[in-house]
Image 1 (spheres, rainbow, N blue to C red):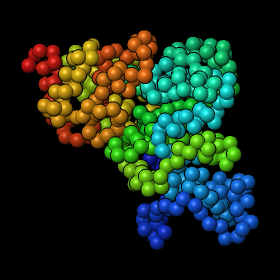
Image 2 (image 1 turned 180 degrees about the vertical axis):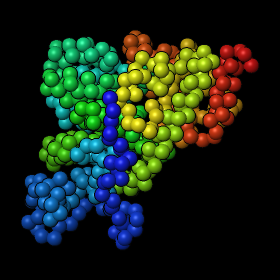
Image 3 (image 1 turned 90 degrees about the vertical axis):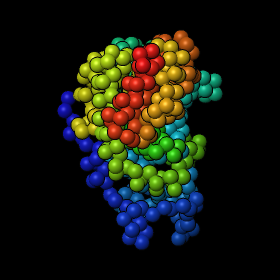
Image 4 (image 1 turned 90 degrees about the horizontal axis):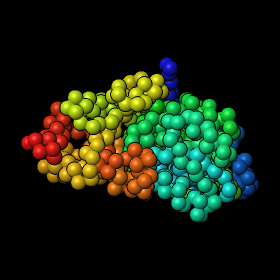
Length: 417
């Protein structure tokens, strides 16, 4: 499959917002509330006749803001940048990735509805679907092997699910979802395909493959500095607007609002996101290949022996590689912890910390950290071994320096140093 969509080109075509006084950068609109020039305008805003998605705004003859939790011009502009990246009609930024996920699913589902989800997803999302939703909202989820397309279809048929949920590349096992096939299966049954694309911004554009809603934890690669918590929803204009509705919108009423100062800061990081992602991918590919050559149990979708290597290649936009995460299976949690301690405390290779997309390498033992919400049985079913070390490969230092440190630590753990 050949894709002609380029996220960088799409973002470059998006309208550039100048500062209020002609500066090259967008100004920050820090106000929490907004004035109207005529009293009869305010009821129109509350009725949805004025606002960023109104016909008046599109025709540049009006379009008023009301209150910061509903819409803020700076946050709105950042959302348009995110939409351009994903190639969707609209986008909106939230205060966290999980806030985006919860709001989207609450918008799509009501009490008594079902979701079909990949069994291998971020632990926080898993807990939301398995524990919180059924107990607090009466929304139930069936977890499936997302690579078993027949099983996915059967689960949708049996449950009548409103939503099919997947991660482009699963956290932490790096299983790749066939977004095009999943879209066909979901749409044939009237379900909405929601895809978390946190691991592969720029690399994969799920909406171009048929996904209805694309979610990001902006905290990760889009931020790139592990200094802000943020999320994003990219979808059709009608869906985004429904989420901001004053009476029924999940984003409006649940309140996961992004601070405009954060949105402004993130607009300055978007232009070099593609460069960063490509370099993360280049280094991860090289390290994964060297680990495989040495006989280590490494998994990375860029390796030709990864089960979904060809699938990810077929979905990927050219020029950005195949991702910045790999896993190294050290078999036991003791060996995994020893490896990470040597890498951090002896070599300054990276940090023992959760999250990803940082400019330094971040390492965690997934089973006891970001996937600890899963029981041992659920972890086994998801393919998460006790000693699985997830590495988000950073950009600092030279590639050869970082490889030397990693291999030295690996040999020390194995008693060969």
